Length: 312
Ligand SMILES: [Mn+2]
Image 1 (cartoon, protein in one colour):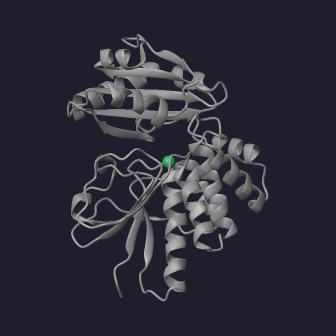
Image 2: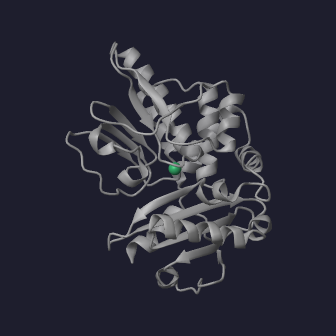
């Protein structure tokens, strides 16, 4: 038997990273079967489950993807929901990347072999995957449709994020109708099942949805987001958050760590920064040194937070 081709999303996986991997591995297995190929695709993950993902997998009777930490020589992999080495499995430079399915900027990966790349400027990788079922003419099972729909809604903050396109709205409407739910209600239920910020261990709040980026000067930064329907409960813990991200700056040598709590109801984010706060001040024209700052309308790390930082 040939070794499975591993399909996985980024480190610190969010709902989209895991759901897109599950959906895409299913699609690839169906295509392989239809074409009489003996390739097997296995959905994997590079970290723990977000609460909404664990709940959705269980509710819909979908097998939980296997946890892997690293890949190596001889492994064939498909990257979903990321394409940057820093955010991928350890040892990714030694594996063969056979495909990328994503909705992020290209972040510098170099490959030895040609590969299929399916990157779209849309709100979620789950939407790219759901569209691929249509293009390939593979029937989307209802339980995988429900999982993908959840990821489309979390990644677009229930279509409020500026990353949401007409493509997203159309495929969300279509998938929701197929699953038999109202998309906004379905999305709100998912956000409500997320961890209570008053009780969550602080390192989880800070690291659960955080990504490393490399600045043009070669220094690394760490940008973490926590989406909530209870911003005050997060801000009550600002001192703890500051201590935790200060520690990350010291331990990992980041130029800065930017943590932002996104209030999905008020549609904005509160920035808390440690390390080189001047850099962040310049990127956004704000003063976040020693105090947190409310950023109205900021919902998307990709478009509204990482992009201005990486452009500086
Ligand atoms: Mn995503």
